[in-house]
Image 1 (cartoon, rainbow, N blue to C red):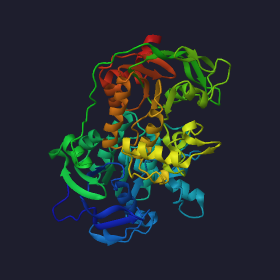
Image 2 (cartoon, one colour):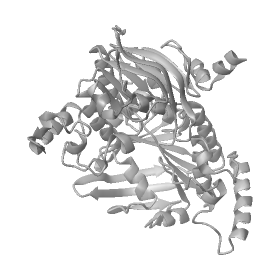
Image 3 (tube, rainbow, N blue to C red):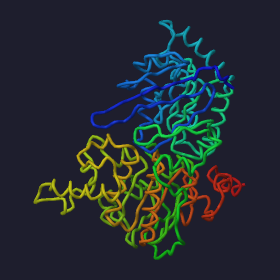
Image 4 (cartoon, one colour):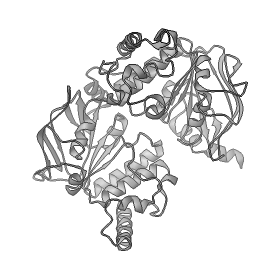
Length: 514
């Protein structure tokens, strides 16, 4: 515990930052006590990532002061931040995938021209850090062969190796399974016990309440509140974040399933190496129901969605929409799948859902640009396209409401809304949705969940893939669990997290095989 006379680990005083007309940070004051875990929450676009980027030297504030341990510091770049004892673990890992753990940890801190001597010293220091903080990992393992949870551990080791006393984690559990997230929180607890200061940026209020000592809330560029975690609640934090009461639980009545709309029969998908990723999977999705697929990332869910969407060619099996086999003539592509009445919200919006350099209105028609309503003769009707985009922006509350803005300049939640509006507005018979709320703030999560339930109630068939068990259990009318490319369980929609988690780990599959 810190004494009353101990200066804060970090003080931000009057931090102000503009990007053109966008006022990202508005005279922010923040104090973070040494040896604590301090959460920062806010909607996408609230300014929290900008604030942390200023603290880590990616951006420079237009006004204000940063103090570390009570002393003013000038953080002009990330190297200055590291010298000040600040490390950062990014949401998208900054690792060289074909390097070993040791090589990644040393990168940029090789210890002089004699690499062999530097390597020996680094290996010894890495072992010391691993022992001290319980971060066991093989220093000679190649990063791309490690599961995501261990890759994140490498990022933490990198920061500690460089002497970080203050560790910033940006959405650290966005790509972790529940078990990996629990292990991360144990590591953070050990770091705190050793006197490290942790700044945790996340939109998951349950995690904030479980692991932090204090939490600060940002809204539209301002710091609106700081609370002791033990003295607040998810409901209060959500209201502070959004500026209104937020529904934290999905409200939906019972499903009224109709006829089978999507049928998958004995589908097998192999990757480029010939490894079977989807192994003889069969299931149906009916009109008016949401079928959720739960599973640890990497167990075939992504390949399954891509095969149904026409992006990846199946090795065997049949996909039918309204009884008609897709690709019966051997040709299957996303355009033909869309024409059959199936829409797809991909798991990775950046690489498969959007072209970030395009304007919002261009992304709003992506894949549907040959629709006659967007054409004027052989050319695109720009006025019609922009009018259509403005209507979607209003209906889906996309911020800022500017259809000419480059898509890269929208927050993650608003980028997701651009994709959802494009696909849902086509009035599809079947909607494939992959990770609908990944990296999305609480207000947008509420909006997206309501849209999906409304679609179900309108008689649409929805296939949902999510690594968020709470999301699967809240939204799905039926649950399928995937492990090692197969459907290994069909727990009831009200099954508890532990029961589904065991299936996700393949426990039931192994027991059945013995």
